[in-house]
Length: 136
Ligand code: UDP
Ligand code: MG
Image (cartoon, rainbow, N blue to C red; front, side, top):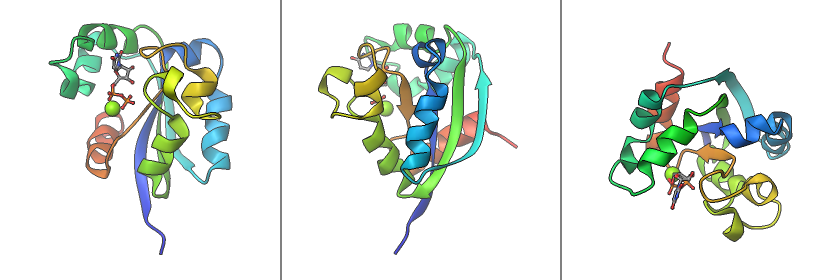
């Protein structure tokens, strides 16, 4: 039985800056995720704060919002079988040091904060995050 889902992916500023957009997209495509929508944008610190508000009590929140708004990012809707968990698996652990071989964060992440990609962590959050960037 297939279980088609959509999830939100973000290529973060460190990866856009290093021209890794096509490398990262090709990992999704090779692993049965279709890029339904994508756009390169540069968000404000206020928009980043809204997007990451679940983390507002964390010590890294201010730096995280400053970072996500520090340069262009690519936001994408990925679609495919179990897209939420498939994307999380392809991303690897939050800290690139702990990420499995051949995951995006192991291949490209620089540090726990400059870890190249974001991915929704549940179907429910995927809907909220997709709506945040792709309101019709
Ligand atoms: N982050 C950080 N320091 C930490 C933990 C997280 O800078 O100690 C950043 C990191 O960029 C991460 C984001 O905050 O991707 C969101 O954290 P979360 O725990 O949701 O990790 P993710 O879902 O991105 O793996
Ligand atoms: Mg998260």
